[in-house]
Length: 99
Image (tube, rainbow, N blue to C red; front, side, top):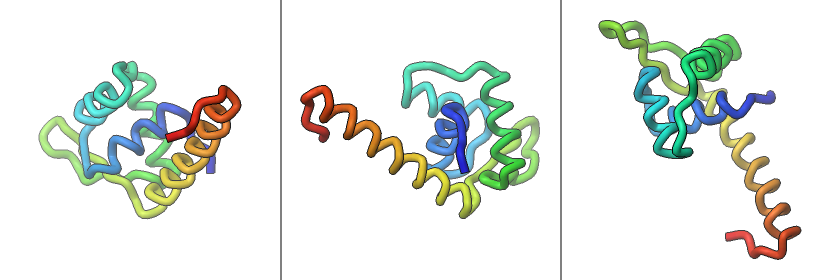
């Protein structure tokens, strides 16, 4: 199952545990130095929930925390392993020793 970059970032943020939208975007900003726009963030959340990669924990006030499902963890691991292979190959092609 393919997920786009925004979805991968959301899944990475949720790997640490359940979060609501603002906290997810804060974690993404800490990781990348940039925040997702509201359309990108909430669009990714909607698509990930439709794919059953995340699930809502119900509303808590105005916040709606979500968490990874077991399938979401599997997909995230597959995506990160594929990204690591691409990064290692690219670095070797540049003559840089992958860490």
